[in-house]
Image 1 (tube, one colour):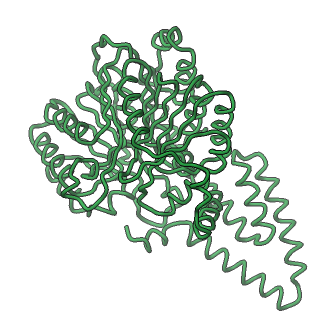
Image 2 (cartoon, rainbow, N blue to C red):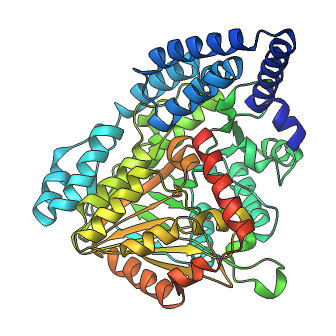
Image 3 (tube, rainbow, N blue to C red):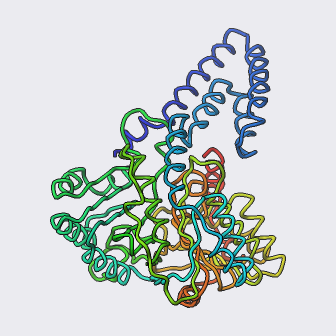
Length: 507
């Protein structure tokens, strides 16, 4: 979708029109000598607006922003409040999602058995899992075979082999498709399996995929028997709900194998440095088996049913898994910006508050809100070793500039910051005490926390050996960031970072 068309269907255009109307009224009042009347009316409108905002479940910074805007530009301020009220979907969208969540998640009700066994092994892990069970409504499972991937080569090799072995169905959901070796290999596998009679359902984010791949490719997939469904289609006038994109990357094979990762369908994760002009990208993923796969099936069909408007009987896709002889606990989950609460943020807060010895976070985007920042500072002041590893090689320069703007305060408080150079890292991990971890598609930024559809997997047990080893290697190849490094920033970078923080408030 072109940038112009995206702007045309967004609320940015509407806010621009409201600003121009407001500016015209203000200038006219000034010319006619009635500017004092304009400001008295503005203050009255602002007071009425903040009265209605008082009981809304919004951030305090948002309420203050609306009040200040309304004091000076009442029409613009009210337009901003009204338009952003639906940024997580209007009443129709919320009702539709409520029905989907109720219908789907009651088919896979939580059990206390796995949680009870986890409680005997780790109280801190139990608390985080209990929070996920209570708020998201997805079960925790034990005795699950889990394989951790620290590279795209191994991940896609196993994913392709699993797809080739499919007998009944393949469910796949992705955020971004970039044409190349990975995409064409996957496409060939899926079309051959569809020809064999295997049900293949493919959900893709319309906003991200259409930037890199034209619609003819999806038409070709449908012609080969692959059911393709665009999520949150970028069409029509729409609302700011169009900005709520789907970042999930999940695959389910016959209900027996589940894959979840941060890997897009792209060659950037393969070891093809000689053949690519781009910097190689590091990410992480997992494969697991057993009844825990049911959580992925539920996650997939929630998005599928919203996008396709079809009702699916999930029980037809469930299979009885065989318990593995491992000491692993796992809770795959998905979050969406429509539901009440901020599960993406609260999962991180739960892990941070329950950490006893160490916290390691790897991320690409960093735009910490006050809650997360204060939680990390409280943890380090309580004697917890806190490390944040971020990618110095960002796709967009302002992303790196914004991230660095938070580092001075964090370093002063005792948090250790590491930067990876000469290689992009998009891994989104949080590891506590080297005993539990979350792999997710959620970054440490406002958009991921509040606006996007994400998925993740909470893990505790034997799998942590491989994850901890990978984290140690990441940190050993990263460079510590010092306060002196941050103070060397150019004035233009400081101004750019401050402006980015202001924009983050408006989001």
